[in-house]
Image (cartoon, rainbow, N blue to C red):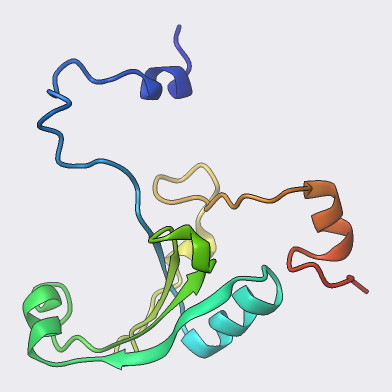
Length: 138
């Protein structure tokens, strides 16, 4: 039996690599109830930098893009990450006019769907003793 990582590393023979449309992964988005609080947490706890502060998006372009998913789309979004990582960022999104559900609060790790985001660090042991952002934990 082949492990998932080994299988994923092999080119898919059904896709001509010269015609592949997807060439890599770009960003991850997380929906939160309070974008300002989430931005503070990702900055203070994980040491991510605010690359684009929270801003409100609304109007025709957003309605064209998301109108079939949300009746009157409005979203507050911020972009967090590290300046040198290009588009490998975390988008933090709040839908201020939409009530979020609590289904994920009851979800188990084995339920289908997104389960985690992996972050890179130089020294995982030091990160746990000093904090992921480099400040000493109390």
